[in-house]
Structure formats: C-alpha cells, structure tokens
Image (tube, rainbow, N blue to C red):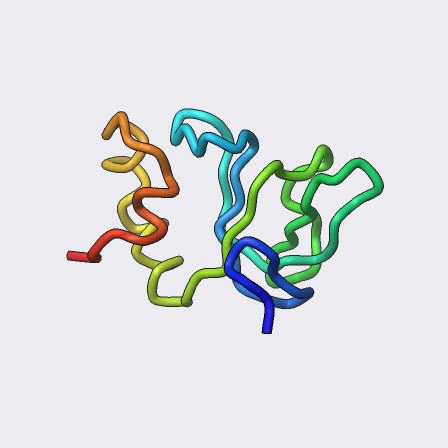
Length: 93
C-alpha cells in the first residue's frame, strides 16, 4: 500500500503548487494521475482533465470526507495563515 505522500493512480488527494502548502497558492482536491518526467505530480478531476498543466509539488492521499471538508472550508483555510498540510490532518469540526 502506498504511503500518504506516495499515492497511486486513482487515489483521492490534496495537491499543492508548492511544498509548503501555503493556502494562498494554488491547491486542489482531485484524483492522482501520475508523476511527470520532472518529478511533479499530475492530478485530474472526475472527468479525467488535468487540474494544472505544470503539475503539483506535493500530494497527500485523503478521504472523501476530508476533501469535502477542505473544499467547504476553503475560504477560512485561505485566510488562516496556516499550511494546508495542517488541515490535511487536523480534526474536522
């Protein structure tokens, strides 16, 4: 089984443009596709469309419940000043 930071194709993931997980930078919740030739992670939506042409620096497997929570709270997360990686593992309210 893959570790949370090494997902397999089809895994539901949180992906961030930069490794630090700054919520003011681009981030997505989607499905892991592959690692490109530059070491970036490709993530697709439910229709199989790439969510960012340049890929993402960091990904983490998450549950659907966690993904829904992240998306529902995206405005609060964006202005929290905390890394997305904190929210990828914190207690959901």
